[in-house]
Amino acid sequence: MAVQEHGYYASFGYQVTSFFAPSSRFGTPAELQELIDAAHGHGLQVFVELVHSHASANSREGLHAFDGSEGQYFLDGPDGWHTVWGTRLFDFGRLEVLRFLLAQVCWFAEAYRIDGFRFDAVSTALYRHRSLHGRGRFDGGLADFFGLHGEVDVSALSYFKLVNLLAHELVRPSLLTIAEEHSGLPGLCAPVLAKGVGFDLRQAMGLPPLWERLLSAPASEPLDMALLATELCRRRDEERRLAYCECHDGSIVGGQTLAFRLMGEAMYQGMSLLAPP
Image 1 (cartoon, one colour):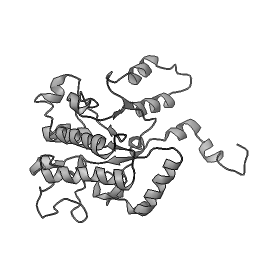
Image 2 (tube, rainbow, N blue to C red; image 1 turned 90 degrees about the horizontal axis):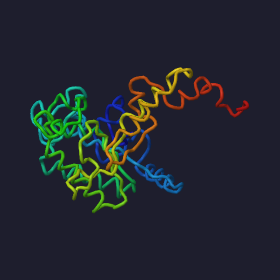
Image 3 (cartoon, rainbow, N blue to C red; image 1 turned 135 degrees about the vertical axis):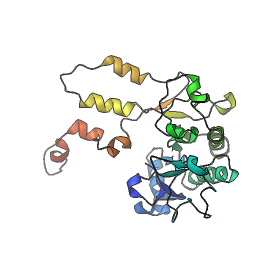
């Protein structure tokens, strides 16, 4: 989950108001550092989610109308708003925006020794056409991504190349970058020097719904091997994927966790130390 400070709790941390501050709901910055050190002591890697595609429209605590104008950090006019989320969309063509967001990557990598970052809603930043902000249909043809229909924001594309170069060459070579990108943009995980965007991994968006579908089916129903093989192989040869078993998106719409689907009512009856397992 996103850990940056946010004023609207129902946003699950995705409407960020303070980009350099961990959320105060869960403790102090020093306590977060202790938690990460403890995880590293157990051989675990720690990844933080970064929301660089949009920001909270909260003008009292966030960047919106920081100088009294609609723009400054964000695109002017209707292009600067996500109509579904009610959030502001960054103007990646402004040097100040690039410096601000790149500095956040450096800060969390250095001050908290984060091992990698998952960039939320990359598609939202990449496509200027408002109908495509996180919801458009892509059929896989190159015109979807680079033609008039796709309308890729070249400034945003350049930003993600820049942030990957910064993370891998200037901050720490071992730092991992992960993209949540639903359109299937070609070259997303190719090296920047090979004209790619430079992410290490793409989040496998279709796998959590796959496990949910399989576990929700009656035990007597035969396993759909064609569906299973198709979803597990749905990637480009040059791309590595981060394969989630479950995702918070399921709980947002009222779904059950993977553990609950597997355990059922035993979740309530079989968790006591006072009773036999």
